[in-house]
Length: 114
Image 1 (tube, rainbow, N blue to C red):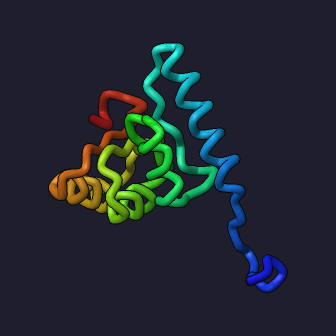
Image 2 (image 1 turned 30 degrees about the vertical axis):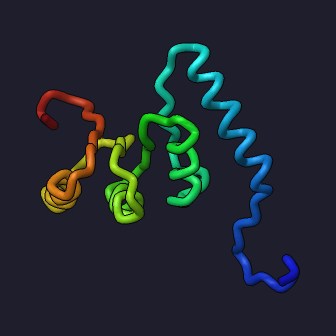
């Protein structure tokens, strides 16, 4: 298939460049004693998140509960939600992920959110 035949939007990736960038970022983190937990907001793609984990990332970060669910359904088991969680429904959904074996964490702004 030619790229001109693809429907839009379509994600086109230079795989060798992607893998090189993942390796470079992981090497930089390792050299500086940092645990790398990349945020998936730029790609929102479980396959790329798995590549990041295979390159050495300690887990991934997402913005929303639904994004965490998608990543967990794809086999990713260490997820940080980089936003506060508001509402019982979202907390129940997060609890379900934890019950299913996902290591899940999220930030809070104030002690009353704990």
